[in-house]
Amino acid sequence: MNQPAAAAGRGAAPDGEIAVDDPRSADVQALLQRHLAFAHAHTPAEHAYALDIDALLGPAITFCSYRAGGELLAVGALHQLDETHGEIKSMHTAEAARGRGIGRAMLGHLITLARDRGMHQVSLETGTMAAFGPARALYTSAGFTPCGPFGGYQPSPDNTFLTLRLA
Picture 1 (cartoon, helix red, strand yellow):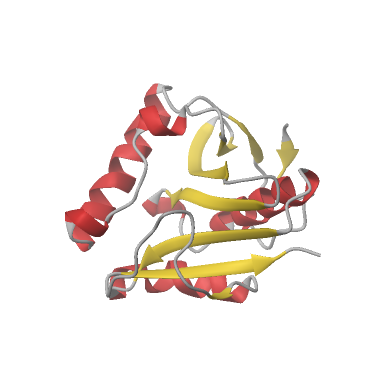
Picture 2: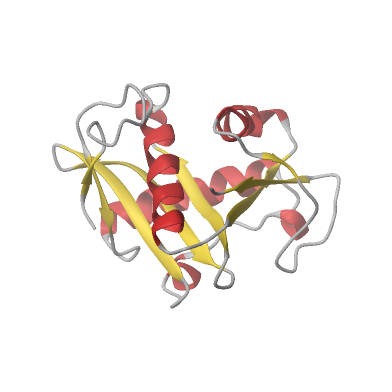
């Protein structure tokens, strides 16, 4: 599913395309390694839930990338927990591309994907530390609200859980 990001009405992102991608691609692996390094640098190991490449290949996961002019700028995934509930995973924007609406475009794409699959709710887990402040701001600006742990997560002072009901 290729979708021009600008046409999707997802903010001020530059022209680019969001499409299902292979997390084993070399450039994707490099961005995912930065994502994992960020998560582990700011979260105790027992509360860092970023998925590695093998987990992103699971049958319940749809992994997407945002590319502009062939350059990988962001990644994100939708994990289908059950028929009506999805989880946003592995959202990461390349550092040089931040602040341009690309993360918002990816989030919007994943929410649309969940709606198109008949899900009634999408949830996510992110960190409570200051480094995760921009991510929390993005999610709350998109309508996500605090919720309890879901999908096997346990409460912790290092994790926050957010959800969005889909109409």
